Length: 161
Image 1: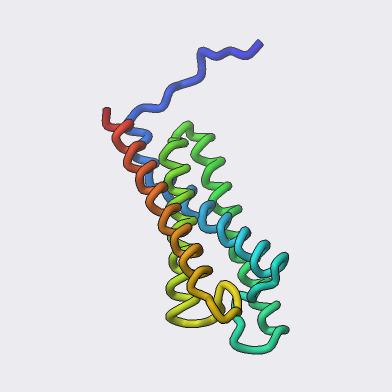
Image 2: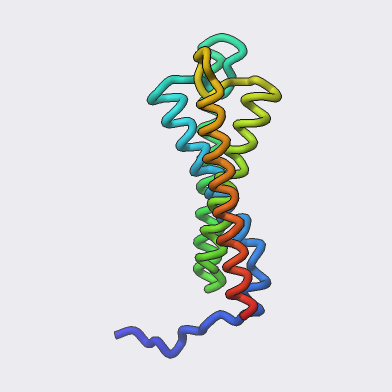
């Protein structure tokens, strides 16, 4: 039978001192998760585009591999930070999940606006009427971002009161 008398509740001060760690852990995990989904679904399974489509197919595949490695580094980095927060009993799940959605939404929006439209390194899909795909892509990004920010706001209110 375990001795539960040694379990210590975290103080509010401890939560505040580690709130940036909660943010970065969730943000990196969310960014890594959404890039992994993008790379797996749109690059590999549907084969709609590569990370870099302005050259040969071979270079597109290499860019996909680097993109995939980046997504895993971000995901694993976020999970290592999560494990450290749990070990220190400083994990705020609500704040963390808000950060996950914020990271996912920010990357998706960056991808949809900067990479798709400004830099034109690739499009969602190469068809004549692209606006529907862009609309869905960027709307999903904004919804993820707004939801994440709302959850973070709720988490902050709970920490204060």
